Image (tube, rainbow, N blue to C red; front, side, top):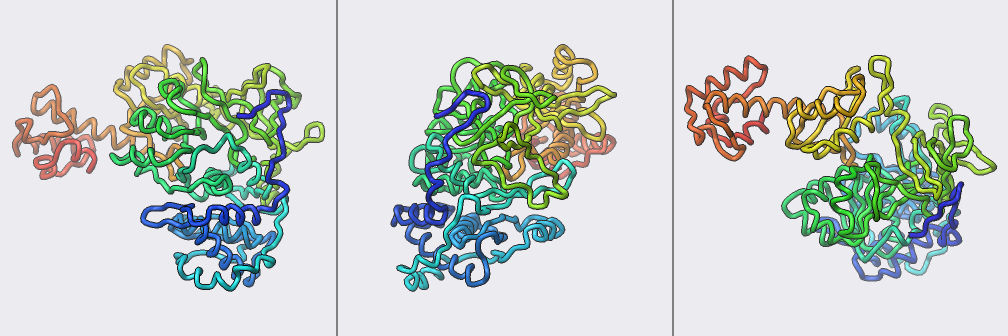
Length: 546
């Protein structure tokens, strides 16, 4: 990996900047020929088919008024359709914004008010439908608009600290920047796992396409299912969110090691999981806000590291600066991370309400990330936490990342997530240790005011983009507590030491009278269990059915 360590850190501008994005896409598709470039479920599309289809679609978009500066809303369910529509939109000179159909109508209306779409893709696509019209434009490429590096390529809405999503505008130069990093691509197939409305999909789709890779559509459920090992063996490059990396590195380390290049990031890395997997394949810990185009720093995992896994150095094309509270550069020490360079956004679409997080230092424009980092003298960066993850508990400031790191170091804890819920500090964890043991362990290493309420959960729920789903996590904690109570009550009523998930209540020696006793006791505790389920289903199924 080509990295630099000066302060500030800068890199090359990108080898593709002198070729417009539409032409680069066309050349990549024509070079692919009849090779499959997109594989999704039962569908596959060759380079020839994708080039011809998107050429026709681009012509129709232009006839409908789409062009440079215009934004096309993409609302299709099928991810293959989304990929086709994204490429057609860019070839028409316009920008795209993926707006999932699952979004509430109010949110969709807010997004469309902000982007004023010139066209909305909603219907399923038929590649065959367009191929018949492709011959008419086979030798007519002159109509394709010439795109400039400063043209708007896409709009992504991110969560705002004010509660109002912010519309991040990324230019073509950002796509060139992320695609012109050969160290981020390996082999012939890249997995497409990220939700289409998140910027990691830009790396997977456009970066993969422009680097000559086949894009293979994957989903989280498939990777964690019994057939997940086979799916992992089918890709050469794969980006995973931190939580998903933790899960796969623990559950299927040999299968994940078959992937030639694994990138992971998005949340605080778990040092034990990284150490356990390090050396099995090429592993990159990556970091970058949406506002700076997907990835800004990377660290090839190697050598010794402490409990805080480094996020590395700036990748080529990015410029990083660490500043103290006074805004002065930090050569060695802690401060806020600023990021500039080719991936820097054009700005928020509604800067009047979203604010302007871009600042200028010594004539260079930077995005103020709000992330605290530690910088070594050689420029190596380590993420310390976000300013907005500092919460107040009884008047004291507590960093949720610190609580998570302390919990992750305890024996018997696999994963841990800290949250501030209704004014109360909570830590959710998976593992074999009991809640009392974990709380005692935290008491031994944390100040009294930062020791949370500890709740064991059976899993850490993830959002569609693979990050921790805090809303579902609270519900999972309630469900797990109820499941634990069911098993504990069964053991007490039947006077058995163990009640395995795989056996039924009857197989443990229970009868209808004992079952009624269990149901009655659980009802008093506010846990509802059907007596017929208890008598006929495995205990684990009864618990999950609650």
